Image 1 (cartoon, one colour):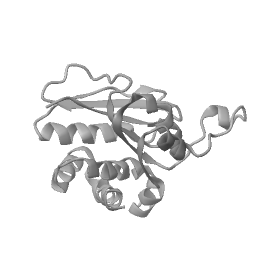
Image 2 (cartoon, rainbow, N blue to C red):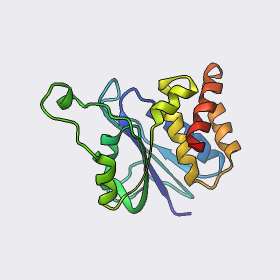
Image 3 (cartoon, rainbow, N blue to C red):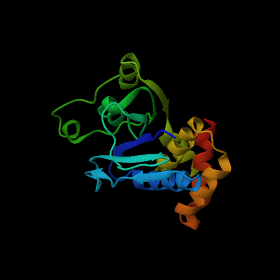
Length: 190
């Protein structure tokens, strides 16, 4: 199988590490060779972060080059736009419609760009945008945006929902499992 590439992008503290662990667990259980990069960026709080997940018959590096991402999974609109040049021409963006002001906007040096979803579509990208924050709150925690996004991403994989649930059970602490299963289902069925 040709190597597939997934970029998970967002802002520090949003749960990109758990999302990448979930994908890694899921794909390894399907028998793929999987490489997951470390989180790159200001992952402590508020800075831009990116994690790479690559899988296939044989994967030699966790790094994804520009124009090679099959999927960009974004926790926030501006981050999806920021990493757009990494998407393959036939790639898919799965993004939350949440908007988190970066530091230049917070200090008043810039304003948040408008109509980013439309601009990405006009640039030729396939964009699946969803209000993941509202769905996460419906599941019981605004921190479950990452799992709502994984539920949405599952639409693009020919894998049974049970495989996703098994991976979720392997990476989520038991006391948060039901909340995360609900978040996944809300994203999957939205």
